[in-house]
Length: 516
Image 1: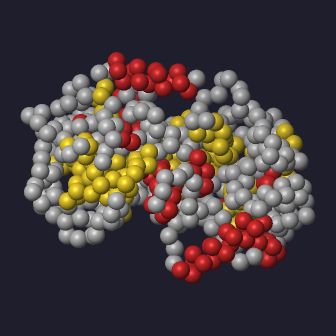
Image 2: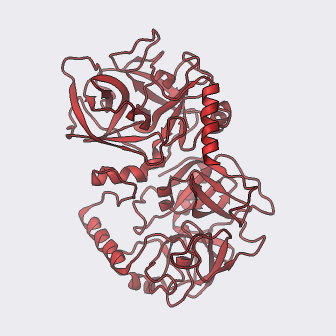
Image 3: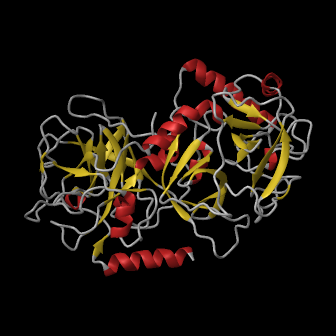
């Protein structure tokens, strides 16, 4: 089914005379001197192939489709790529996002590791990338490149065009609902400007941050394209980017972000304790629970990537789901609502328009493990789909030994496969001080402990991102546990305390955009 959808998508692109890459700057202006010093010309055999941009001293971000033909060097520090004083730096290796298949199918993002560091001097700067999506419809942004001009000749001088962010639903409709997830639409629709006037791999820059990467457009009428231009949404790949930037190698795992010396030392000690204990820093199992009763827990959501179920979540508004921040590591693309049984054939997945991860989150086990998913459309509430309330104040007012519940589609026994039916288990709230003592140094703040201690139940029997529900209110988000002895863990299971993030959640719900 997945292969069929890919085929249909590429067939539609072909039918619409769509080019699945962008290579032109039309109706733009020559970039001002001493501006956009982060811009890079990605070259193959001495010829300009793509744009790119410096996000660190030795890493360039560009589009995955720019890997063909294989680039071997970049030009930095000059807006004229034919100048006699250009600086060329060899590419040591490239890291293509693992799920990338072809341009037009999404995940069009790649890192280039340079053979040497580029110093931040007047001619060369880096550009920051966002931790979360933070732009609005009709916001004015910029795109630049060395692509073709109105006369269909490639430009030696960097050119820049102003574009506006386009509503994602309008964009999907203009593209006949064939767009992949995790993209941004800007320009190229009802205008003479866009990255049909851009350059593959170049950045979409909003408020001084690179928020998108030039990916593909409809090229049948380049001066006045009739569908928005498409960029890869960088914020959706923040976890993946963090690993190669830190470890200087291509990898898929999420790594701990940068921190101060004492913070790093504390984290190092905590994660070593977890390792010694056989701790996995995510919850993924339901053990000794029961099949959820019909017509119950209608707020439960299955968060899924291209391969299927990865995390739990719960509906708090018709188009907003709460889940764990570490669930972004699995590159979710849509959610399934309104069913306890994931194999039902009549399920209608709803695409994720964007996600907002709490800005201070760095890694599971360090706290702040909470994320909101903004859906592409509002899901109607009925007897199968309902929302669940959140705490009304910044204190969850939980009592020791209070009886609550946790649910998910996780495993039923250690090392067993995921289940098809939603399962639920009752857990008891544990004293915070006792929990902190059992976990030891480095235990994060703003968490709730429930189950998984002197019991055979808990979210070691839960599902990452699912809710801890007490008195009909979602008070916690499944975060991490100790999995060495899943049936009878000897430390409490840990949830993110939702009450401590209410202001952040309410700001996003009110403004419909990610906020810090």
